[in-house]
Image (cartoon, rainbow, N blue to C red; front, side):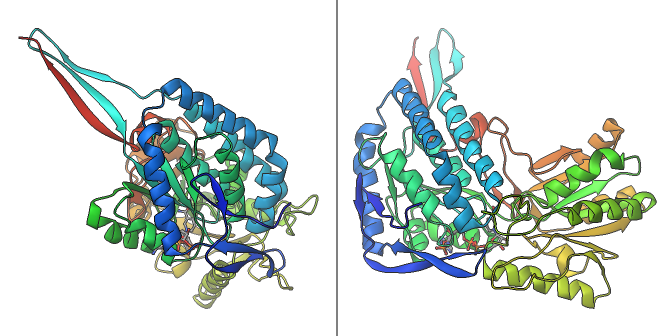
Length: 471
Ligand code: NDP
């Protein structure tokens, strides 16, 4: 794995104009490489290069862009091992999960390549022909987080390119290398300036969101940053897709078959060590099965092999960064102080890495920080309920609205409960599953706009009505 990376501006590798910053390996808590840092002037240069490239890229044909996206997928595939190694090293996740992330990046790229940009005939009469077309927006700015850094970059970049936009990407400063490598690979397939990358903390993201020549920002990350982006984007009325935090509730109905659902609940709560926007983050279990389900979740938690992601046999890696690690520890300690019962885990592993074992917390309820706030880490509060109406109200009594789930055997009943959850996706007997053909996005403080499928694709376009007078 190489440790020297460049920015890419106008098709050229460029050194950062500012002092490089260290990137930490979460398995050791120590710096393992330095990342180049862009200056705000380099953001301007990247935007200018993207704007220049847009002049011709917007008129490239559908067939050309489809073929290019498939070639990008080929390039990711050919470099899959290296990309997975980078993801594990800087993000922390076990190598098998990083390989899955790279596989997802390839699948999403190929699926997006094949999406059609529709032309809708609104009226075809003697008076007129009215058609709704979709045109690219211009320069799109992509700002990505540290949890699924490669896959989320692909989620942002591919629909932007497919629809004829050009892109400036800014990855999280905690996990920049996979995206620097990805953009290097994409650059080999597209004309100069179609994709550009700048890196650097806080100020660089703000330089993009306030930039007068960026037409849209697609952002995945925290709600406070999403709010700042929205304020900053107001000056030139940028379009926004904001995929923000969640505090997804899962409701286990009295008729749930625990043999069938326990593993799924564990996996979707602890996916990526719980650092997944749409992970199951609050589990409400009917009192009739409360203890039995807690016991099963503890059994599964204890089977996890916690350790560095690069080590063979490890199923559970570290938390990605110190701030998140400290937040998880703090929320668990607060729950303990409030009288909750820590059934397993509940203490960081000794050493300098950010290892926190999967933690199940019982005898806890709403009004505790661990339930009310997004933990975004390897701890799941399990909350007892007795009344369906009450649990629906409790699930909805949260500012976030990303996803939610209902677990049970009577699917009609589960559907009725799911329909009443205030969130962008509801799953039955599942959670956290995102698919390239299913639009995904949040409501309330989890953001707005969707990604994926035709609806997601069209968020990168401006509609234009063509009206031809006939009589
Ligand atoms: P942030 O929202 O702060 O960062 C996400 C991205 O936004 C990074 O690329 C960051 O750059 C950039 N950024 C930060 N501030 C600004 C700004 N003012 N304007 C434009 N861009 C900005 O997330 P954190 O990494 O701090 O994580 C904090 C919390 O966010 C987590 O605890 C979790 O709750 C939530 N989160 C949600 C995710 C999701 O998938 N929805 C993913 C990750 C986190 P830089 O790194 O250089 O500061």
